[in-house]
Image (cartoon, rainbow, N blue to C red; front, top):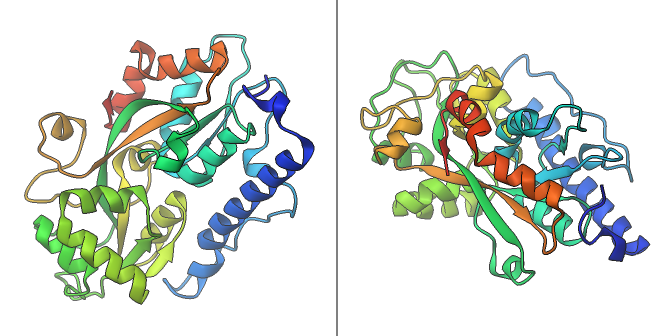
Length: 308
């Protein structure tokens, strides 16, 4: 079915949206492959997926189905939720690969998609469009590390020291490789919200380009799993649902999870939300309600996420 304001969108506007979505996807693909190939670990040989100019295949509507797109942090969990929330015999909505929270909101405003997926609050310039935000899950933001790193007994201050470059090695002496996300990444913002000193270090890292930057959630987990000594910030739900081959260190003796979030024992988290345009169709509203209903609970349990 068409997006709520698709009928009002003229040809040039749709073309601009398609080009914008393709550019964001191309950035993500570049980070997924080419930028990481030379710098991380021996044996990293996967090239970036092929991208065809003018054809944003990662966010293309399947005729007769809803299209959701946005933050990569939402993708794994939302795909699972869509599968249990689609009535028998109905067309399953499409959840596109990551185009980022900002890309999703822009595409929704332009009428290119039916709902945006975000892992951060709306920006002021986005709120003026009268969008409706429906939060459906709170997920722990965690350190994802190479599976062969030794156990660590870190405090939150140690995480600041790691990103500041003051912990260059793991306890066994192997080099510690920090993978940075782009400025404004929701995971980094979540840690900065709880640790003001991390916010200052993170800003300094971005200005100095201290660490290699990865622009895609899935690419970061793949890089961490393949590069000895690597670590980066991710979210536990994506790790659980994708079965990512990474270690998740405890902090201050506390392991992350939904129970820790509920008891306020884990300080780093982000809320996943679906964003609807004014006048959104009943079908997409029903789907968003289901994300918060009883059908979603088994999925949230498997993801170790807290329902909202």
